Image 1 (tube, helix red, strand yellow):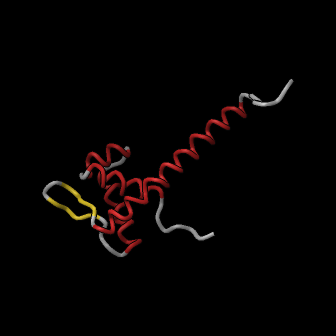
Image 2: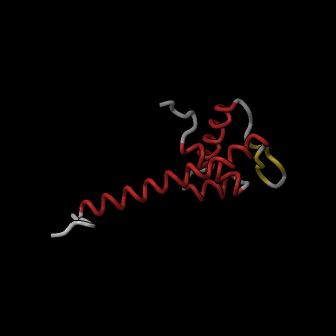
Image 3: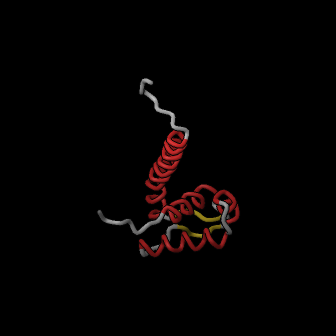
Length: 104
């Protein structure tokens, strides 16, 4: 299996910055410092060898490449969150020894 160059942290930072347009609200949404969000988006820039955002008077706007990444980044984040939730639920059920579909 090939390992991706992008991390979940990078994807989350790109999504938050694309949606919030500013480092401060993006960082608050992620529970990180603005510097951490900047570093993660900068690392994503390095993966593609181009800028994913440009600074404007209204904040940060995704470039064309940034818009492409954003359009594909939300689904994997949703899938990771779903994997966490279902695994957490399975672990909880297992710890409680609840067997669904088995007769006693």
